[in-house]
Amino acid sequence: MDETERRIIEAAIKVFSEKGFVGASTREIADTAGVNEVTLFRRFGSKKNILHHIIHQAVEIYGYHVVVEPVAKIFEEKDLTIRQKLLNLLKDRYKLIMKHFPLLKIMLQESSLNTEIRNLFFEKVIMKAIKVAEVFMAEGIQSGYIREDIDPMTALRSLMGMLMFLIIQQNFFIKLTEKEVEQEIEKIVDIFLYGISK
Image (cartoon, rainbow, N blue to C red; front, side, top):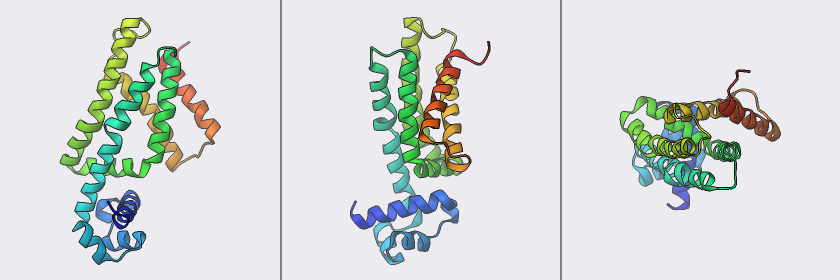
């Protein structure tokens, strides 16, 4: 990808994340990229082709190298407690998702409207996350620090649901400081591990 194509893709991510695919115009994408509309069409052919390029880029970013590899490294650390592993995991995921939030927003918006995109995102990202969670849970059960009756999918949904609510809050509502975010992540891990009952 050359510099012009990179600018068009970055502009499209910005415009699509703000207005959605249907609400975005090629004119606005071209203006945001600092190119004329003819250049946009010469490089990508259509708005739909730009979206497909972004989706495939998102799957690459949120696929193996982001979902599986770093998580596996965190969980492989032998000298850390389960609490420390989960803290490291959520801090890492928080930074990653915040960095790529506009891209994730596009993926979620378009997944709700397009079966092909939804299936691609589920297969390449969600299923890989589930497999990592299953391995972690199995090791935890075998080591005796996780209950045997916990479903990996439910555990993953609970943990990531709390993290995603924090991320949504940061992007749309109340902005916390970096220190407050770290404190919130610690609270999330403690609630996940120890529950809310006395």
